[in-house]
Length: 128
Image 1 (tube, rainbow, N blue to C red):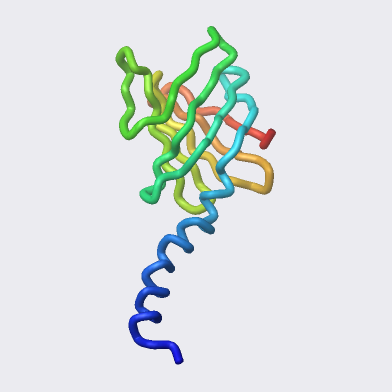
Image 2: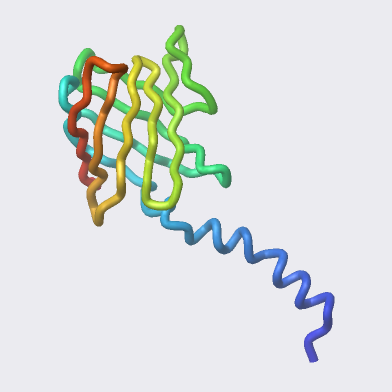
């Protein structure tokens, strides 16, 4: 017979199970693509925190620039980006300015890169 205590302990694990199987976990991996106005780029997502914050880095062929993901954007010496996953969407605030708004579509991340009011262009990446 299952006791009340066992049921409560079993239910306590459900949030972690739901988080582990969230659509955002499909974003984990390496993505290679092109960003209008910037050129070749790679997104490496190594993990997603419970609040949706992305762990990993972005790499740009232009000037061999690498920017890691952190809990806040830092345009200073650290040059960190902030990435947030929510379901199948990924928003990245860039240390160099601008925002990536991407949606998972099978093995592709597609969307836009917008920098202020002066630039808006396509951004697309495919899973490696």
